[in-house]
Image 1 (cartoon, one colour):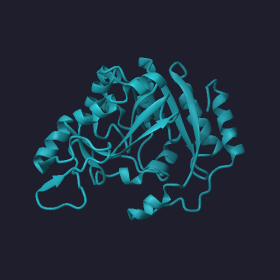
Image 2: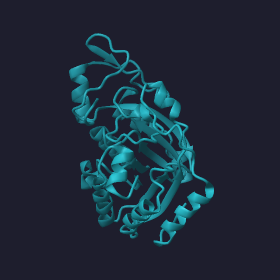
Image 3: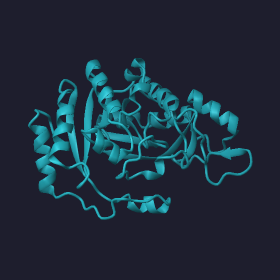
Image 4: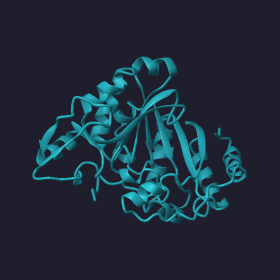
Length: 291
């Protein structure tokens, strides 16, 4: 498994010989469809951000940020969220090799639509900060073209972003998955503190943030945990514009089984609308705008 987005090993299936091939179907066919490079060349291209492993993309409205957006899902993530609906993005095994220039050009083709709807680019995953060099360069290219930029992140790798990187990101969708260390590690297999540290930094910089919290019955929905999350987010009222409380769904279960990963939430059912609304009220009690 790749340990990070720069030095980890990329495994593309099927793998043959010393050369790997990126079939760039992920962005509707780009100039990289015939790209073929050696593995050392690939590792160097990943280090510089010349090439990224793109899992998929979609055009959506009123999801993943304001307006009509191109959401690009990048492969690789350090978290192992039990309820992840894109488990095939966790490891650097699935996706298409794309040059940063071709992806940026594809995004810029939609600028007229973005301008008309107040939309733009959203980088998601996986975790977009896992492939930090590619993400950094793509955001700069797109933002410099006058296109609104958003990243959907857990904040776990937020320390990788330099201050100048923050300037190229207009909106952060920050996923706060739990409010206490024990629950956070149970749900993600990682630590909570990096997310809090990143949220504090965004607050100090006055960067626009939308918080996302997923209600998973039996895991994240206890009164204590929800109140802990609400207390954390209440630290950032100067820059948090809204909190999205999202009910758990198991639509990703088939993906877990397809890639041979054990899925622990088969017996978990979505929370009732009343329970979700109660949790929203807890966030509202902190003076937060809640959706």
